[in-house]
Image (cartoon, rainbow, N blue to C red; front, side, top):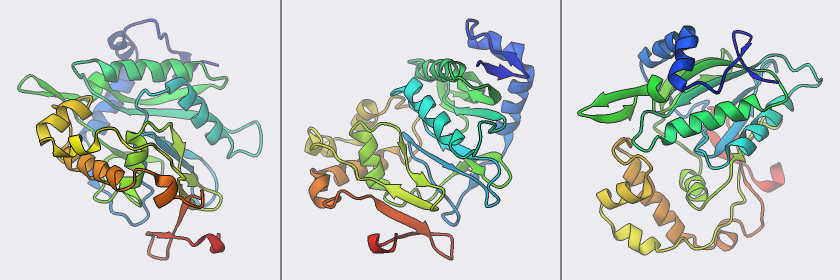
Length: 288
C-alpha cells in the first residue's frame, strides 16, 4: 500500500519543492514545529536514541505504539521494514490502527545528502504493504536556515512525549547510559539496532563487537578542524559538542580494541531498568 497524505498517494516522481507546494498544510506544520522553543530534556524519564538506533514503546495503558529512530542512509529500505515490523508487533491482531509517519531533520547541505536520505525514506515507506500516513514533513529545505552563505539545520534533535504523542525540538544534557559504547558501535559500522524491550521495560545495550579501529592514535592526535573535515558529513553545520564527542568515542575505541574481551566476555547485553527516580540503573543478570 502507498504512502499517503490526506488519504491520497504521494507522487514521488515530482521534485520535493513541487510536493511541498501540493500539500501546503505540511509546510505550515513544519513552520509551527520550527518555531517552537527547544526544550532541555533531563534524564528523568528519558529514553535517548542515538544514530542507527531505534526504540518502540507505548503509554502505560498500552494504546498507541511510538517508534523513534535516527536513520542516516546506511540501509534505508531494510531499516524501514524493520521499524514497521517492530511497531506492528505491538498489536494483537491484524488491525493495528492508523500508521503515522513524522519525518524531521536534515537541511540543504552542500552534498545534498539530506535530500538523498529524504527521498530514500519516502520511497521505502511507499513500498510497505501497509498504508502509511505522512503527518509531519520538516526536512531538508523545511528545516534549513542560512547564515553568511552557510546552511544549518534549524532543528537538531526532537523528543516525543509517549503519553500525549507531542513532538517538539529538544536538546539532551545526558545521552546515556553507555554513550561512548553506543557511539563506538556506530563509528565502527553498526546496523540499525533496537535498544529497548518495552514489554520488560528494559534498555538492552549490546553485545557489540568490532575490530581495532584503524589509525585511532593518528585521529586522536589531529586538531579539531581535521576531525571536523574528515569525520563529519557536514563539517560547517555540526553542533559545538561534535568534536569532543568524537574524541571521547575514539578514546573509548582505543581503550577497548577487543570488546569481546573487555566489555562483553559473557556475550550478554548490558541491561538497564528505570529506578524509582526515573533514571536508568543497570540490572544484574541474575535479576532479569
